[in-house]
Length: 423
Image (cartoon, rainbow, N blue to C red; front, side, top):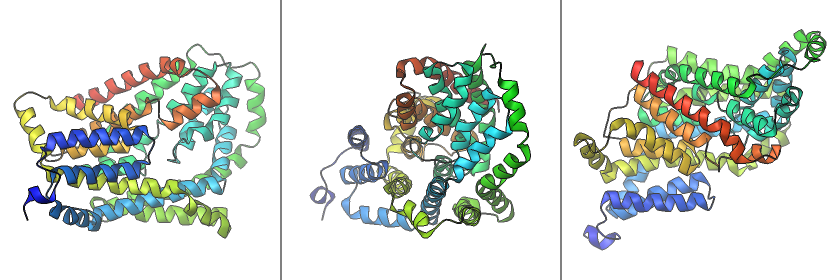
């Protein structure tokens, strides 16, 4: 049987890609789960541009690939760890102990969203909003400035967080180990923190009673330090095991099983310190969010496999060789726009890598630039749940929050480009 008789027709890969992306945009506009959206987009692209007889083979090979299995399992483990942190209320202990340890409302306001950021859950900024509100109220910040502090500082941790789902997917899709990407992100994160701190607290005076508040909290320093270390131990154990496995077992990181194993260790530590009931342990497994994000991880791999099979990368490569498209634009503008349009950094990364696969051999610098571009595009999108929830919580105008977000985005983006060209 010929291709023409079993497919929707001879659709050129670029046309099929455009049609599939339009479908993707519609699904996201309708707020369909990202996991369902990525997988449906991959299948639509395959139906439009490939011989239908090859589609089951592509799906099978993607599904049984060790890297796919490892990343999907790691994503599930990370989401389970995040949900259990919330269900056991250990995250509350973690944030409260930080407040007790540091006697400065400006620093605490910056740290609390980042600490809550250890939980990569959608709309997680809503968890830190009340804590930030109480700290920034002492400083007399306006609602839009409070919202900016909560959103911006929550996301400073992700570019260097070893068990960030997006970072893991980026590493898996580009073939670059997580530590190599993180090293290049450190200067960018430093700029994020400095810019955020200056925009948030420039010429903001510490309240007069801050000193008296500090002296009261200082008497509980040892207690707060102990509570912090215990509450942080599952995350710390996960990070340490990832680093240890990558150093001790050659090739484990490239297979993706280092994060999965480390996450299991983190889960065991969390269970030991929190002693949850069976009901609490089972509650996260009833949440669709865990399965939706896990499905998105699989969808990222399936979309890459299908895009490679269509040969679209060869078309893009010819445009680059002819000088029609600059490679830097592909590594920055495309991921940033896709991160913005999809409202998801993992979606932006997955689609960008799919288009660029075969066009270039990824290195730490190209992988890092692609990641930070998609990430920053996602941070400022209006549909970003953290931003939407925060604006709603502080009852302020989103346009006023953008007065602070846009300059922060531009400066951080410039820093990422500077690191790319100089390091």
